[in-house]
Image 1: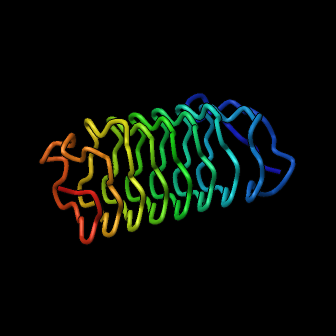
Image 2: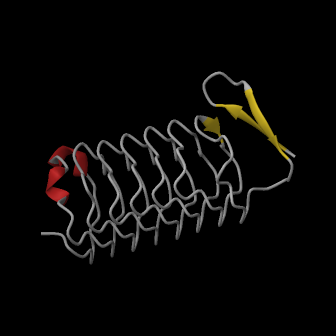
Amino acid sequence: MIRIFDRNTMELLFVYPYNTFRGRDLRGLPLKGANLSDQDLEGAILEGMDLEDTEFSNSNIQKGNFRKTILVETIFNQVQAQGADFSDAKCNSSTWAGAIISDANYSGSDLEHANFKDVIARRTKFVRIKSMKGVILWNADCSEADFSETNINEVNDIDKTGLILDRAKGVK
């Protein structure tokens, strides 16, 4: 069993009857604002959920399905998110500091004011991003990433300090 607490109040939200979220369909669970740090959510399905203010720090969310999910002010610090799908998600003011998001898909998402400081985002798809305004990409490794149809120039120069774009597509 896994006890899930509210990340702000530390109130118990619910007890999950299994010992892992790995590969599970989690739609319908009350996860908005939950603390899901240090959890194994590899391959979990969270598509279309409202996960505003939820914390996933240090979790394994590789190959997770977060399509069309609300991830406003959600915390993903130090996550393993290789191959995860965040397409058409609302990621405004989300934090990904130190995360590994290589081969992830953010196509069609809104990343306004998201923090991608120190991420490894090799081969990640940032195609048709709705907004890059206020995004922080300090020391981000976006080698071979795809920025096709995305205006990366919305990111202030100072917020691109140390940004690696080797062989990236769609960058002018």
